[in-house]
Image (cartoon, rainbow, N blue to C red; front, top):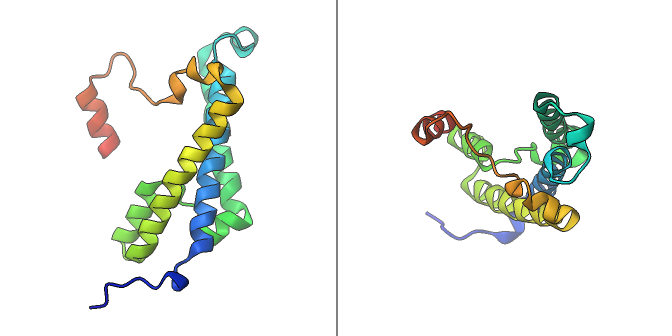
Length: 151
């Protein structure tokens, strides 16, 4: 069994596309969350109800992923944009192990870049929304949220 990786035969362009797509998706998503909920920004006064602003967040976040998916870069990589999705493709035998590693590494680097750009762009406004972390609702115990996310 040959355990050496031939670096020339790896799919570098696909990994690069995943990096760009993940960075783009998080930059757009974190920007819309910050714009809609950042302390001191006008959306709270323009749209006082939380539900419409959450809808706007979902549309923009999902829309940026869909927009990337139909772009040439998204078509090149398959637009996974998430290590869980890449892992699922690997489990189904639709990816080689070295590509799984390349995709996941690229997605993590893309996430760091996208988050860093959002922080540079929004600064304290992004900090005011807890860096856009996902947290469970007040009435849900942590174990329940963990199981739901895991499934």
